[in-house]
Length: 459
Image 1 (cartoon, rainbow, N blue to C red):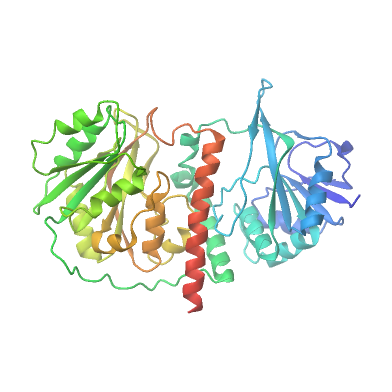
Image 2: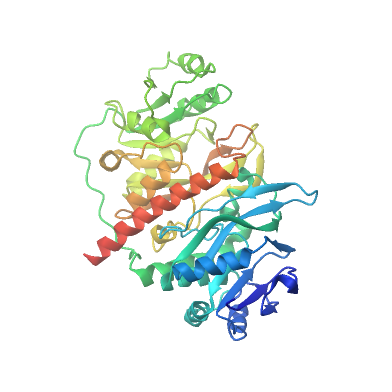
């Protein structure tokens, strides 16, 4: 059998058939650790185990990984695995195929990666910045430029469960203020990668075209909803309580609710500012509901987001949005929100202000993070030329990336939105298959956007 060296952070038995087992003398997030490891590797392939816990490989697992690596010539292979809890409970933990747009620094490859050693060494030699946290992210992006990353959809090993939080609890790790130093390093890594592959965009933006049409109001709050009887009333009240010196209206687009949501919506129809759209029985999802609002003849010049289970945090939110659009002459504005429980009590990680969104590099860094912040506002003349994809996940991210390709995105750093986390959040506690489906779709969005940016740069 072709030889394999093994780099193991956690416990791994010598009887697993490796030529050499190397315990790193530092964290895998540090560049210096990888520089030291590369000098110790002698076998044609190197297996890296990155968790500080015991690893149990399935029978013939490393042979199978070697087989696929040699058949495909891949620079790195990875596989699905099982996760085991302390009580012995075992669950399947599949991963997804890596594509060009899989630029998230938290992409889940699992904890066992098999590298072609020659490629691993070459990638380490290319590491010309000294990172404390982002070295493994830097390494895998450089490896991806040297060869393919091959996913084996087979369950080849047993991994100890080290993070038992729900999908909703993990969702905001990348914007937690305590992780800011990590995020700065991750941004530097992806920026260098985009420059290397021709996908980086200089901070030069098109001017937002003047409005060539008359709008009935200056701004429209858009609330897409389906089966939100417990929260839709709060959202509508929040929107209708705004104080402005310009006319605005509120769109509620209901996508065939069956739980009494429609009755709540209709209880507000005495207010002429409320526009109720009842969708037909075809498929709309959140993106299609947004499209129904922005193409409605009563839509304003600016369309402002309000999710059906959230609330604006003050009566000044709509005014602050419009002031930001007028002041910054941008095509989109992203605000700042406070994480709360259902009763609006602040909860960790607290205030989310997306400081990573800068004029200098925000639209490049946007290809790394999994969202662009909230609430979002859009300049409707441009938005109508793009439209939202008809999907219920990632639709706003897709539009934000597309806008940022050409136009500035403005910012509001005041808290203007309450993001309520409760049992019925659509991303609160998803099964792994749904998380994977969502992540694959966002990676696909990034892939398309990256291809468009690379083509634009060539021109």
